[in-house]
Amino acid sequence: MELNGLRVSRETQERLQHFAALFQKWAKAINLVAPSTIDDLWKRHIADSSQIFQIHPKPVTWVDLGSGGGFPGVITAIYLAELQQGWVHLVESNHKKAAFLRTALRETNARGSVHSTRIEEAHTEIGECEAISARALADLEALLGYSAAWMLHKENCRGFFHKGRDYLREIEKARGRWEFDLLEHRSAVEQESVILEISNLRRLV
Image (cartoon, rainbow, N blue to C red; front, top):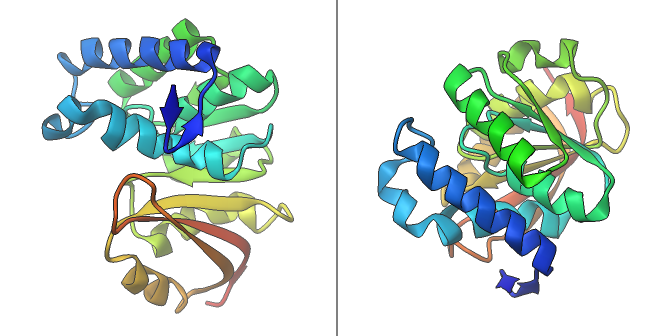
């Protein structure tokens, strides 16, 4: 099996397939993603989320903000299971979604845990991390504000944020409040989308 042109091991493929089946089951009862995108689950959500680990395939500790239906946090945690190292702290304040995330992690033997708390308070129960992810959560300026509790206090902590066609405007707006180094990774799934890799975050105001 390949995702985004990269080979996926049989073990990881089986975990992803089990996650997809769980997702389809739970999505009938609770709103995990926009209903119009469920029929294209593998491309729109699983392959898209897989890019995070494919860009940064290292056994590090992640914080996934606003994990929702598990994208990209559970997908990253599934990839880490093959490495048998690394961990994903999934932050999701909605208790029904948090229950789904816990079930998905447990049944796929993924390397992650769920923190059912507000993002603004998550740093009080999650220690240092090396990487932060978020998808369809907020604009870049807000994401950097959420991430600052970790990125300002841990050298080499990086953020990986999915962004759509309006990403250049978001970067310009964020630079009014923050300084940061930036790498743009073109999406292998959505033609006009990118994953922004942020490092060396500094506060301006």
